[in-house]
Image (cartoon, rainbow, N blue to C red; front, side, top):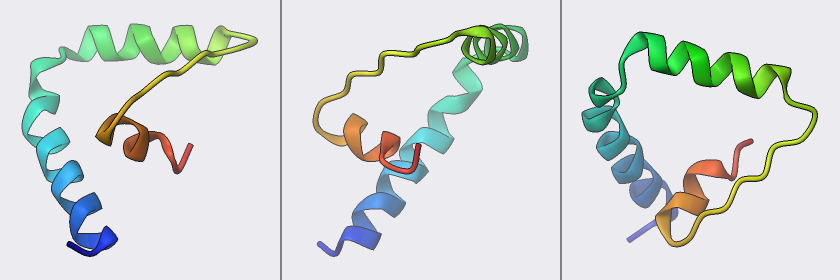
Length: 54
């Protein structure tokens, strides 16, 4: 599988599950991230691929 196909599959899976997070929870998370001085992010497997652009 090409990397672009793999990333497209990951994005599709994330798109299917995003509705499980409510708007208020997402907004709260974003505000906490923006207000933080440091953010620690850990991932394994495909989770790491989703964080590469950040």
